[in-house]
Length: 93
Image 1 (cartoon, one colour):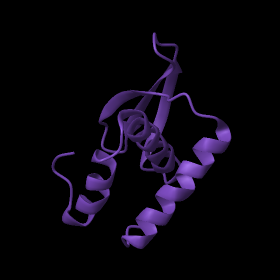
Image 2 (image 1 turned 180 degrees about the horizontal axis):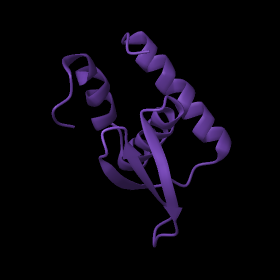
Image 3 (image 1 turned 45 degrees about the horizontal axis):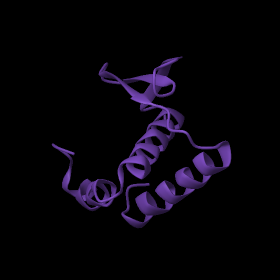
Image 4 (image 1 turned 45 degrees about the vertical axis):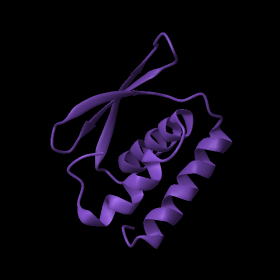
């Protein structure tokens, strides 16, 4: 992750150290948290070869797509709770 504020360095390092599937699940759930916080909008979800593609747009107008990982609703909720705890511990929530 590039161009992050210094307070996010620890968080970025934590994500970067995770295996690919874990990192993808964390990033997807982080996007969902940002949608909840009105920092982004989930514009559309379309089928993809390796699972649904979720298209997001930030409040600044940046758009991107990420694959929805193959996780259950319970796993998604658990990851979001872990992310909230991490961000709270880092003073970011």
